[in-house]
Image (cartoon, rainbow, N blue to C red; front, side, top):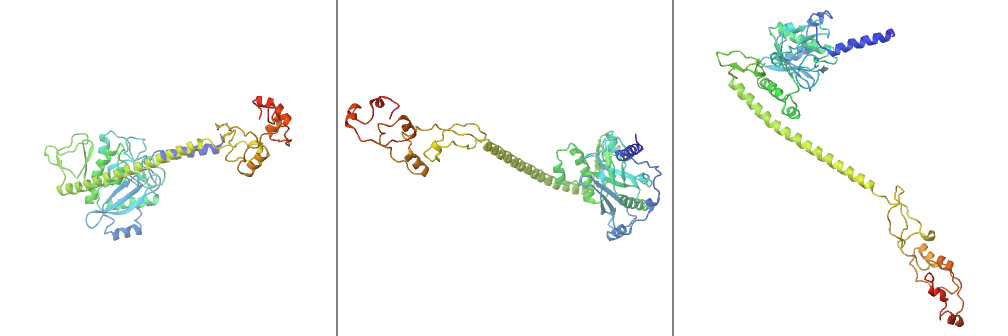
Length: 425
């Protein structure tokens, strides 16, 4: 094998490993600390100033798979979070739905926590941080996997959220400054799509719908308050902003029954109002989707019926070429075709011709060719008229009547045998 071929195969294998797994060794020596400590660029600092934010204020991250968007939210002077910047992702892994196991190449969905120890300044993908998969909810279902990252490189993804190097450096810097300002951890909210009624209606038949409705509760809590929701897990489901009311059971057990708990009434009322509004919008969206589907089916059915009708019309026998009339004369309305053929050259049923005229002599031919009206039948043929004359219309000159001959032939100008012969005139 040539050395060039070996090198190509080795390069392909390395690239395959690079794309097949986004797991990042936190102790990697690739790169260096310079990019991890580089000050924030002037543009993002100006954006924070405009929005009443300081670089040391806490951050929160939201990721939307379908929209391929990662958002950085930052707390402003009001004490609530506001959107600082949206970043288009280069890639995310798998399809819509949560990550289930190691190697499924899925990006996770749910609520995760990033601590300073999950930040990797020496990532093989420029810079990175681990989102914290699996969390308590994932472990309650026995889900496996590790080191699911938000990283640079702008490559394909086998389960991570992939950004450009420039984007991840800015995101990394925002997280670094928030940690330096005293934030102990920041929350990552990962969703299949923006949790709108329209998107839920479009995906209503997805088997993950029950799970998505559960994480939508946390989405709604944040939308209503613009505060980081407190996340608990019990009975294998997420619970948000909940406080136990049973003094004997103050812990939330991810796999056990939920303890008695309550959500602040004001927040509970606001979230319930949003959910009711979303439910109405969901029903409207479903009705519109189903109506559009019916209209599409009707159009498809009509197109199919039209195609069948066209095919049947084309399958009908097409007019063929009629035989020429007697003696090459042009046919007119009084002439019947004696034969016909379809467009495929096969004979088709046609009416039988009428009996030919007693005489089809030159007068008749001339009348037909001229398109005129047929003249009255000619006088009886002369005695000397032969069989060929009668068939082809040649009329011999008439002779003066002979009284003696009339007596012999029965009193007229025809021989007696012609009167007896049925084929005679």
